[in-house]
Image (cartoon, rainbow, N blue to C red):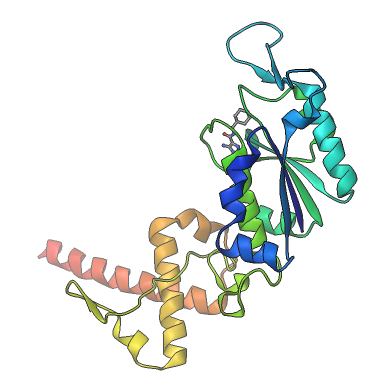
Length: 256
Ligand code: 4GY
């Protein structure tokens, strides 16, 4: 996978490329990553990348010519690459979008600054407009890092064998189960007994219940979207039954 970032602050990416899974993926040539300064494509003596908005108003707009030249240069280098603009106006980024982007040979990530990007560049040269969430950043750089990070860990070989991407949160549409490590008792709180038992089947069942419970309590929207399998349905029905029993007992009490 080739990542080409277009930005007026390429140095922001130096520490990002230099740590953890991203660094390892670059070293192993699982990904190829670069950040190019849009300013390098400005033709004027002062290498200006912004201009005043037509129609007036405060703030500046990203000029179309340097940005268009930078995008065309990047796609010439990786002709199969898709172009992505990071903007609050885009489709909200999620794990399924990360999977789709991971299937391409290259991504050109365009980071806007100022008040926005000239609409004609967006329209003619951008394949995907993506938002990482409903908030406004000062530029697209942090959002581009989020997309690169989430996509990289889905590329075969980027994660060590132990931490496969298929096993983790969202791979199955559920939140991750709770995690514990030593010590067995921390500030009076014990690790669930079953995790110390060595019964692998029991542990897997506990983890599925933990996943389902956390998803139900914290993100019931995910549970509504999910195609539940038979085992998951059984667990939810068991809880439902237990809750109905408790409510039944409570009803009896009130009748006296
Ligand atoms: N949210 N998701 C986001 C953003 C900043 C002005 C265009 C977001 O992706 N990007 O807030 N970007 C703006 C700043 C130019 C990008």
